[in-house]
Image (tube, rainbow, N blue to C red; front, side, top):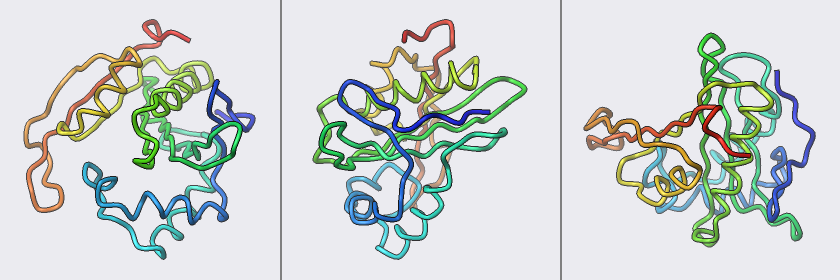
Length: 184
């Protein structure tokens, strides 16, 4: 089980549970075609963002396999919400998890995704005692691949045309890191 103490702080960021008050900030990035481009969903309308935000707000602890932490990424000193970070416990038997992240494009290129994802890796390895954590992404998303590489994750596979997404075949790239390879 993992029940973090919030906020989880990094040098520049604070990760915290979502609240319904985050709707404007969340919808500001979820409605953007450039954000949804490499994700499974299309740009979201406000009602969909509101509905999914209510679900995110409940994902604050991991009790069993299949559970996830879905946390708001905020600037530590201003409190501005700039994205989300995810940790999923994918297998208790094999001690495996997966991380993910989404940032508003106005905040790309500053290392925030790497900083938030590193915090999620730490939670997975120290809080859940995972052995292995993966990151999966659309193979065309080279910026996200660079984030995973900066974390020390290795490119393990590219599954060519393995999914039919948004009317086209898409390839998926998988990165991974073992607990013994992670640096705090």
